[in-house]
Image (cartoon, rainbow, N blue to C red; front, side, top):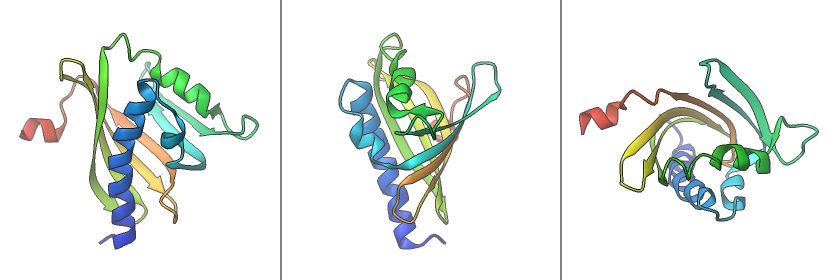
Length: 147
């Protein structure tokens, strides 16, 4: 069973991820989302070719693969064409300092068009230090199927 502190960190990450990422994606400040992370965060995503993309995000371009500004530019550039409205998130489980985060993107019609399930690792201050996303845009999530 996770400690109460780790459980609370996971809940806070899930709530704030949706709120702060949606705000930044709609042209708001990136700083509140960025403040959820440690100085450097490792990221593993699935690329368009199906292979893994591994990189780090942080403020120092000499020690990270990508700066936060580059992350925002790369992440938010296609959202307008997708008719993006918001991101939703939920914490599906906590194990020590790791959590499973389910995220979905909704368009302005309220339709879910992308889901990802992620392993998020956080430090003793509740800051995210690692993020691994598993996604299949053509498969509904277990939660959606059960609804």
